[in-house]
Length: 269
Ligand code: OAD
Image 1 (cartoon, rainbow, N blue to C red):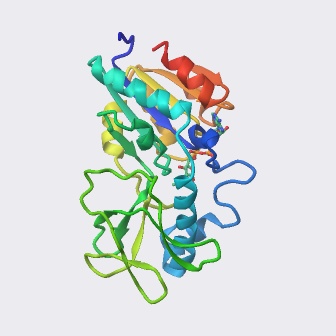
Image 2 (image 1 turned 180 degrees about the vertical axis):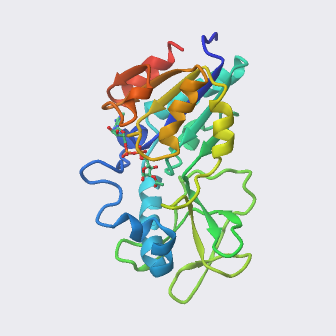
């Protein structure tokens, strides 16, 4: 397969998973549900009420476990694979934590991507920051203690630290095997540093095509990636239901459902 572009960067946000049934952040019934963001997605919120935070992320793990990648995730996975095979350099950067890109890669050998906001399928020790592959839901919607394994949540087979049966404190909170201290979701919370940004910038500064899919373009640094790519001379494309907040930085806007627009567009690159 021949491609016009040789150095491609894709950025995805919640909109690419909307048609799988994952709520986006800024729709009417956004993902934060009835919670204040700072209660469930900040280091201070975790310090104040770790059980509430673990209830929230346990519910999200169970929701992600119940949904499937949609045609947009699959088209993207296939294109990344084909670009690699054709000798092009392609990188996927996602702000999503739902593991649907990983599941769309399936058996494809190229699973290289950056999850700048972390992922639901990892936890880490609050003391030493050691990262674990963790697909357990620890609390139900009422904050009752449960131990539900989310089998469908993708976790990297190469990540050695798999939590098989995590230890819990008397209130049911998970403890790290390394330090016996609290585990926390390996999710980037407000006020924390996104993951893998240096590597992302490295590829953005030399890409010839940048495609943003299903993101409202108002959370940085990801919202600024288009500007970096454009400065590097890349053609910049947004695929979204509506023009994103950073729309001025894009050469091309394809407004519509990701499940339809992504596959169509990828045929032309
Ligand atoms: P948002 O909820 O802010 O934006 C989702 C975008 O997807 C919106 O612009 C929608 O119009 C669009 N959209 C919805 N359904 C779509 C569909 N079927 N096809 C195409 N587009 C669709 O989500 P993000 O931009 O991902 O950060 O949010 C960025 C970050 O803000 C998140 O990663 C999260 C949040 O705070 C953290 O948790 C750190």
